Length: 296
Image 1 (tube, rainbow, N blue to C red):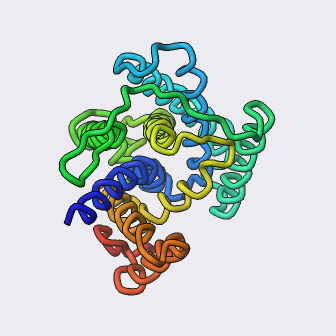
Image 2: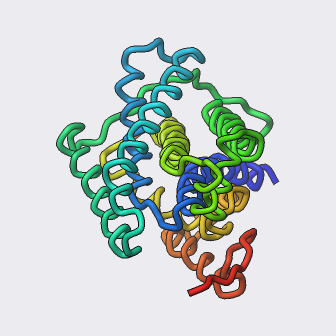
C-alpha cells in the first residue's frame, strides 16, 4: 500500500507540471484554433530564467523561491507575447499550414538559440526552495513535491478565476466563441490574444521551474519530451477545455509514474501515446471535450 501511495504522489507531482504546460496549449487553441508548438521551448526558457535568477537570490528560502518563480513567469509571459506579436500575428487569417510551419520554426529557433546563449552542456538547477524529506512510515514526501502540487493547484485555480470571473476572461471566451462578433461589440482582439499568449506562457515558465526543481539537470532541449507529453495531456482531456487539460496532465503523469515503476518502464513513453490513441478512438473530443460540427 505504501508503494502505491508513493507512486501516486510522484505521479501527481509530475502530472501537475504536465497540466501547467497543457493549459498553455489548450488556451491558445481555444482562442486561435492552432497549436503553438513553440510552447514547450518557452517552458525551457522559464527553467533557464530560474537558473540565472536563482544564483542571485537567497537559496533554500521561501522568499528566494518565490522570486525565482515570479521572475520565470514574467519573463516567459513577455516572451510569449513577443512570439505572438512578431511570429503569429502577421499570419492571422493565413492558411493553418502556414501557421503550423511557423510554430515549428519558432520552436527550433528557441532551441538552437538556447544552445548559442546558454550552451549545450546540461546545468544543475539551484536549490531555490527549502528542500527536505518527510517520512510517514514507508511513505517519503519531498518538500519539492509539496511545492509543485501546491503551486500548480494555486495557479490552476487562479487561471479558472481569471477566465470565468474577470472582464479579460469574458473577452477571451467571447473571442474563442466568435472573434468577429467579439470585435463588433468592442473587444480588442489583439489585446485579448496577446494576453492569452502571455498567460499561457507564464504557466509554462512556472512549469519549467517546478520541473527543474524535481529534475535538476536542465539544457536547451529539455522541453521537447515534456512538451510532447503535455500536448498529449491537452488532447487527452479535450483540447480547448481548461479543466480537461488539467485532468489530462494529472492522468498522464500518474500513469507514466506507475509504468516507470514496473517491468515495462522502458516503454513508458510509448504507453503514454498508446493511451492517447485508445482514448481518441472512443472519445475523439477527449475526456471532457465536446464534439462540435464545423461549417465549411
